[in-house]
Image 1 (spheres, rainbow, N blue to C red):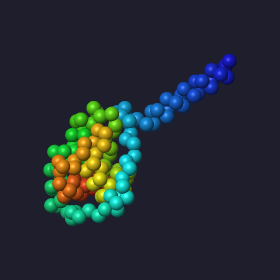
Image 2: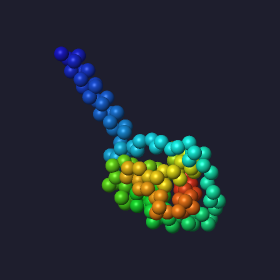
Image 3: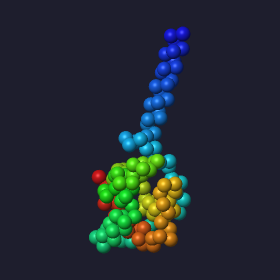
Image 4: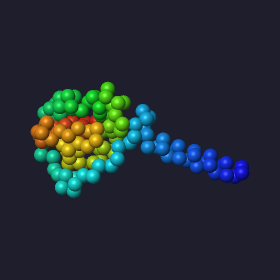
Length: 138
């Protein structure tokens, strides 16, 4: 009986531990991976990186993105804690190692709690946001 009890408790602890790994510190689930079409992964950013693009991107990011993703892209915006899934940390390697085309696709098409910006922002405006978010790199 003691062995059965130990096995049950060990299994329960393991289950709780695995469940906690899927949550961030605020209790939100980690987002599921995005399926980005190959043609977007290899898409080249047509908007030149630089001060003009970063300035335009900052204004657009502040208006459209910062409330969830935070002023510096850490996923700590004022609306972030109300989301079911963590909005992501744009400063880290996981984000920064993705292509510009992947970020363009995600911003343009959205999914779940991430709104779709197709029809709300022009492609060049989305590219400016992508360029600006690259400045969050640690």
